[in-house]
Length: 581
Image (cartoon, rainbow, N blue to C red; front, side, top):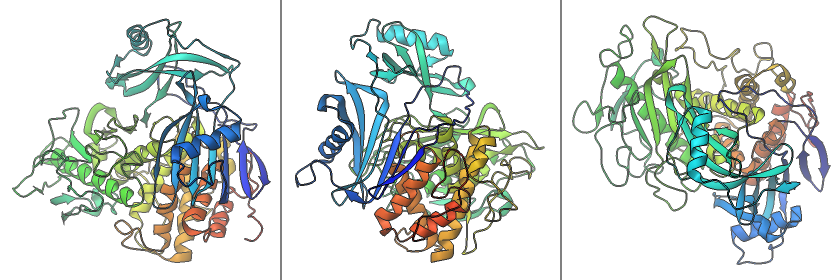
């Protein structure tokens, strides 16, 4: 995504399209979907909106009125898609529409605090021509065209009719269908022209009791299994981990996740003894599928995903924020979408992935074996990899209002990789000294899967904002962002100390608690297809919203130390901070 020009006025930061772009690499057999340039503004203490004086104004009405006023469009061009309230901010997600048909890639998001707008992002467009809103071809014909072009099968999720803005600024009417090819790990939304039957583009949905497990603060099995009793957080999972709101289970099935071997959804791991005891001993001298190793891995994955659910729930990734649950205990969001975890998936080697369809469809985690050692190694026993993949579900759901469509361009995808590494980093830090973090050392035989550890030491990790120009693909971009966030975490912990109970108690004032609040809050603030500058500004605005800007200078100083300073622009480093810092 192109980076943006800087303007400062009325106490806000505003960004719009700019000069240089990063190159994308794609895995799916189709062209990438075009996304119009976006704009993102933050307003510190907030600004009024057209309905500010109406006490009875709903979130939907307030958001659509604000978008209409800002973009000078009439009410028929705007439709409210979704929204929710956290403990401090209300978030609204709006789409452009024509003849009551929404646009795929022209969206807006507005955040409100205390009745004022605190941030606004949009990618609305003014197409030079718009196709007729009456389709010429049937859904069945569109499905057949997509299946043929993508060498996959329609998954029977109901198709939708939407408009798609093209790179030439025309708008095509499209049938939107989901196509899968499990063998090639392809799962896409396909946009088929509803008049010509041509496949125009795709959106990739894949981002690359008693339990004997690896506690989440441990990286992998080399640090030792432990037996944990009742690790569930009943505030986040009031049904426990083995009840989906309808049925109680004695296997690795529950409300938040179903974990099983390979592609066999019936091959969950059963309790090893009555009373929800899952005590399976992993033998590192055997191959992953031998002895008790499958059950040990499935149990560990079940534990890790449930723990991430509970931690992220405490910090704001709840039902209303589009999380993954079979039954939504609290009102809001769409139910029926626990994470499905495929452990030791037999579809290749040396990889893992998370697929994030829209709210209401299960996210899927694919954990493959690694063949770099003898015996092979199981990524389900590398906690940081499981955490990394699960975090893709969080960031894809929370950015853009639960659609799974808003981290698609290369820079946004890089941010996604960075957030996933950062969550693993956060989970494994154990004290007030934030130590260097190495990702994925177990599966690859002791060699980390990233080029450098994340570090506050610029000799160990020299990456800065300008390093994006040399990073190549999303994982390389992600390393730059994750290292910036590692430095932000270290700065906040240096300023406020470290909480050893942060995973279960989000009420503290310690630096690691503050960090995860800002991490989660900012996801809901930032625009669809964010860039580095916009992601940074969302974090700084999140601090304004939650902590009245108490950490503004700590944040700016940390970002500036890695080139993402106040005047950073177009992948050029800047190490300055705003006046007053």
